[in-house]
Length: 135
Image 1 (spheres, rainbow, N blue to C red):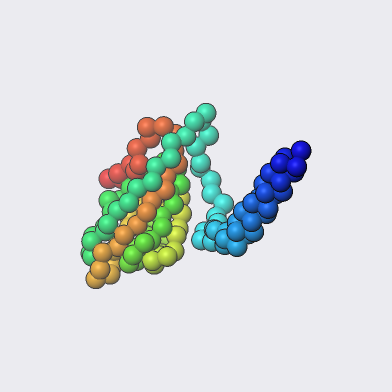
Image 2 (image 1 turned 30 degrees about the vertical axis):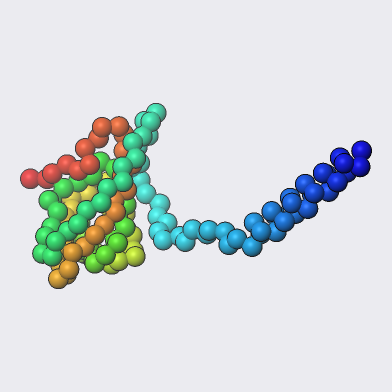
C-alpha cells in the first residue's frame, strides 16, 4: 500500500511539473489579417480548396478574366494592383490581403521594379477552372 501511495505521489508531482512547464509555453495566437463578407461561395455538397503561389515579374499582368467564386490573395513580397471593370484600381502591398469578387471582369499588374510574390486561396466546386479568360 505504501508503494502505491509513493507512486501516486510521484505521478501527481510529475503531472504538476508537466502542467507548470506547459503553462510557461506561449500559446500561438493568430492575427486577423482580413475579414470580409462575400457573396458567391460554392454551395455544392463538397468543395475544393486550392492554395496557389505566383511570382509576377515587374511590368507583368494577369490575363483579363473572371473567377466563378471569390479569390483571396495574400501579398508576400512587392505590390499588386487589381483593376476591376468599372472600379478604381486597388493596390495591395506585402503583408496585406484582398478578396477578388466572383464574376467581375478584372486584370492585375505588378507596377513595381521588383518581383511580386503572392499566395492565392480559392474555394470552388470540384474541378472548376481557376479563372475564365475574357475576350
